Every structure is written in structure tokens, then in C-alpha cells.
Amino acid sequence: MTSPSSPGGPPVVPSIPLHAEPARQNGDASVGALVKEVTTHVSTLVRAEVELAKQEITGEVKKGVQGSIFFVLAGVVALFSLWFFFFAAAEAFNLIWPSQRWAGFAVVFVLMLVIAGIAGLLGYLKVRKIQAPQRTIETAKESVEALRRGRSDASPSTVAERR
Image 1: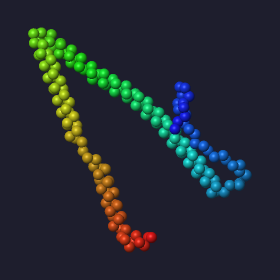
Image 2: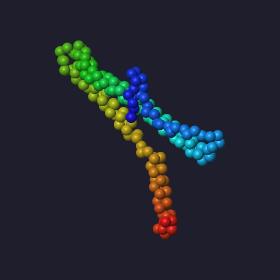
Image 3: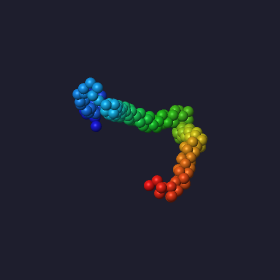
Image 4: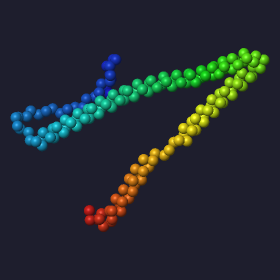
């Protein structure tokens, strides 16, 4: 939908063609013709503005997606780096108990389980507080009730009379 962009510049938005204005004599147009002309120009202007907004938003969303890829990459690298941190922590505990190497790894393992348990508990407490969307449910019930009342008001004889 977009034309190729110029090097280093934003994409070119395709133009919406305007109709050529016919030459008008002074006082020649009626009010209806003028209203029609204004309506046509406003419609064209609105379509052009919507197209421009769509193009700009699309470009910004693409930039956001590209930036988020780097955040995901950073998160993955940080997550894999934790293994080295925990291994180093276990080796540090092994300096305290050099004859029992397993003890340092056991301490780190227990610490990791405690942290995971606390995070799981906090997540559970947050999820437990989630409630149903009460206002949406109420308005949906009101809409259904209004539609039912509208149907009951339109009896078969009333509908036949309208035809």
C-alpha cells in the first residue's frame, strides 16, 4: 500500500485523487451544489487523514516490535546467565565447606526453591484477587433485557401492519 520510501526518509503515503474543479461563473452554483461539493471535499480530506494516520501508526508499531525483539533477546541471555550465577554461588559456599562439596550446591538449591515458592505464593495471591467484569456483565444483561422487551412489544399483528 505504501510506495517505496526515499533513502533515509519516511514511507510515502499514496495520495487520494481529488477531482478537478470545473470553472464556475460568479453566482452560478446553487446551495445544494455547494453543499455537495463541501461534503465531497470533507470526505476526501477525512479519508486522506485516516490513511496518513494508518501509515504512521503502522511504522511506529514496526519500530516497537523490532525494539521488543531486543528486549526478549536480553531477557533470554539474562535467564541463561543465571545458571552461571548459581554455580558461582555454590562454589562460594564450597569455600566454606571444602570437604563437603555437595553442601554448597544443596544450599543454593534450597535458596532457589524458597525464592520460587515465594514468587509462586505472590502470584497466587494476585490471581486470586481477579474478579469478573461486573459492569460489563450488568450492561450486557441490560442490553439483553432491552432486546427482549423490544421483541415482546413487536407482536405478530404489529409487524404485519408495518409491512
